[in-house]
Length: 86
Image 1 (cartoon, rainbow, N blue to C red):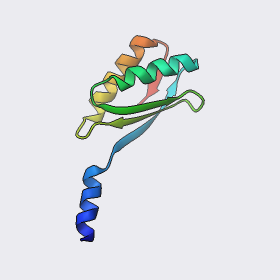
Image 2: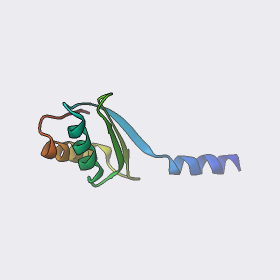
Image 3: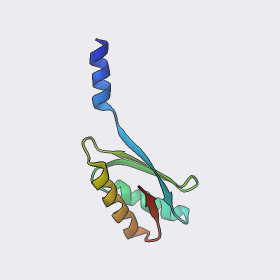
């Protein structure tokens, strides 16, 4: 029974990553967060202006590298001066 529960937890494990960002104002951070959340493959995203971090939760089975390329593109569209360090 223990092995079954462990396998189920691994299957349900969420893919989350944290990225260092550079953004000039809190409003710009909010724009980046909204743009990232609308990106295909992103389940959720939180941008923290004070810590200059972006926490991204990916959809199950998503290709993280290609999703993050799209996130960068979408964020640059709303805030051209932002940086996301992959």
